[in-house]
Image (cartoon, rainbow, N blue to C red; front, side, top):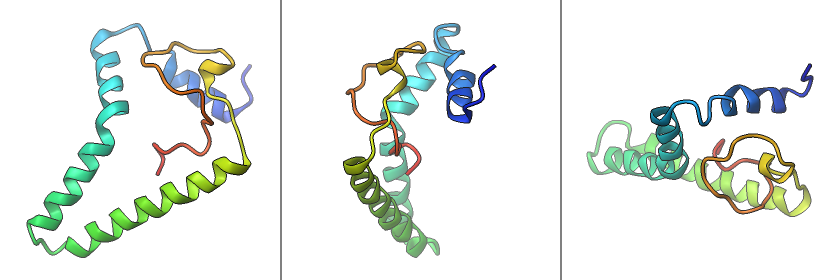
Length: 106
């Protein structure tokens, strides 16, 4: 029985890896490209001069602030990535750096 919620969530997501090539492709695409899609989305809102222009700017600044805070936390705390332990099925290679805090959550 897994009692660690972090590990339990990891297994819920990672247990699907390698079982469906379409789902694997979607997960790899999201892992590698979602940040660019988010940036393009904010840029489109900004360039369209929509009523949400200020919110797009705020979201961009908040993302940069979050990444900065993440960087500071990683200087003081290290948590291994699952493939470093090793557990799980790896779909893409990744540097052996701390998994917490995750820039994906930012």
